[in-house]
Image 1 (cartoon, helix red, strand yellow):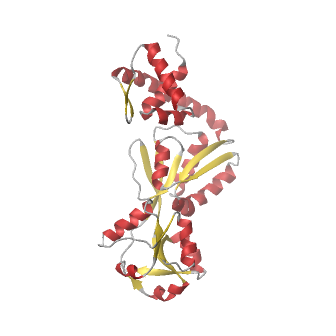
Image 2 (spheres, one colour):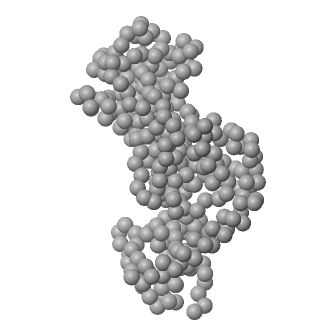
Image 3 (tube, rainbow, N blue to C red):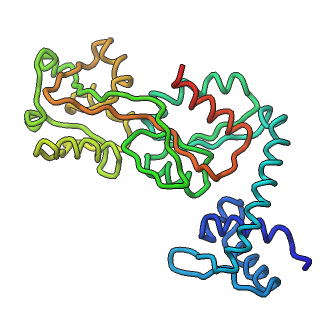
Length: 298
C-alpha cells in the first residue's frame, strides 16, 4: 500500500496522547487536519483504529497492533534525529520552560544565566505558570519541561525530581518591628491583617492545610496574584505575610521588613523538575535539563 508516512507519524501521536487536540499541539498542526489524516489512514488500510469518546479516543485491537509497530519505528527515527541534531543543536534552537514564580525567583534564574552565557545562540522561552498550569503544559507537550514548587502531583508518564528545598517565613512591615522580638502562634495571627496568594494557587492550599491541621482557618485579608506582589504590600504595612526566605532576606537585611518567629513549625517546600519521560526533546533542551538537574548535586 502506498500510504503517506506522515499519516503514521500523526497516528503515533494520537495513539500516544489518546486525544486529537493534544496530538495536534505536539505536532504543531490543527485538530481538523489531524482528524482528516486519521480518517484517510483508516480508509486506506481498511481498519478502524480508534474508538471516539467524550475524553478523547481509545485504540481498537487493530489500532493496538499497528501502534506496536509504529511506536517502535518512531522511537528509532526520533533517536536518529536526536543524534544528528546534537552536533548543531547547541549552537541554535530554542527551549520552552514552564516555571512557577517561586521556582523561577529562588532557583531557576541562577541556573539560566550560565547556560545562556555558554550557549548564546539558544533562545529561551520562559512561561510564568502556576504549578498546576506548568504540569498541564508538560502533559500536553506544550513545553519541554517545568520547574515548579510543591505541593505538586504528577502521574505517569510524567516524572518529578527534587532539585532543592526552601523555607517559608512570616514577615511584617516596620510598624510590626515589636513583633520581631516575640513568638506568635498561628492562632494569634487572626489578630493581625494577613496577606496571601489567591485560593487558586498551590501556595494557598499549602497554608490552608497547615492552618487546618491546627484547627484554624487560613483567610488572608488581602489576596495577591503573584508572590512578587507580596513584598511591596508588606512594606506598605498592609499586613503580615508568609514568604520564601530567599525572597525576603535582602529586605530583612535592609531593615525594610522584619521576620517574626512562629511557635508552630512550617514544613519545608521543594523545588522540582517535571518532564514527560516519553516526550522527545531537542539537544538544547536536554542540555539545559541536565544543567538544572545536576546543579543541585554540587
